[in-house]
Length: 160
Image 1 (cartoon, rainbow, N blue to C red):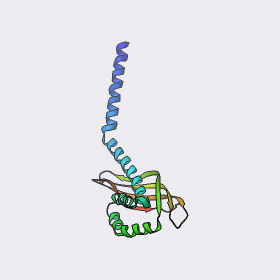
Image 2: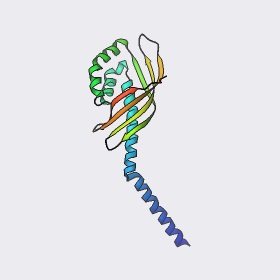
Image 3: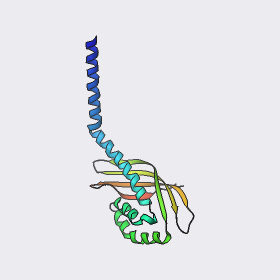
Image 4: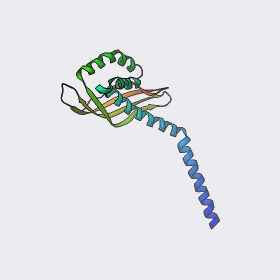
């Protein structure tokens, strides 16, 4: 009886090891990790492009730019200087806080993904009352050698 239990325990240990290895080393695990990475990146991209503070304006605009790829990057570079001047004059501060994110499309072979990201936005300026709202963004991303970057990020309708 003890020999049978020992053999069963050994078989269970081997089966657990095989399941663990296949779960952490398989293509499915790799794709799942890439999906998680894309979801986290979408959230961070939306925070980066929606957060600016007077005290860290250049760094905030740099973080936004580093989150983008073409065609959005070219558009951003064209308006960045004027945008920065407007923000400096108004002393505007906008802080985005992530609420949730989910992928709506994912293609690991083409290294593309789309996501919807919900954020809370708190804004204030020297001339306006503080405002808070929730906002949804649709983000289309491409995986570059530097990580996931937004090719397009647009606010969706139905914001509060």
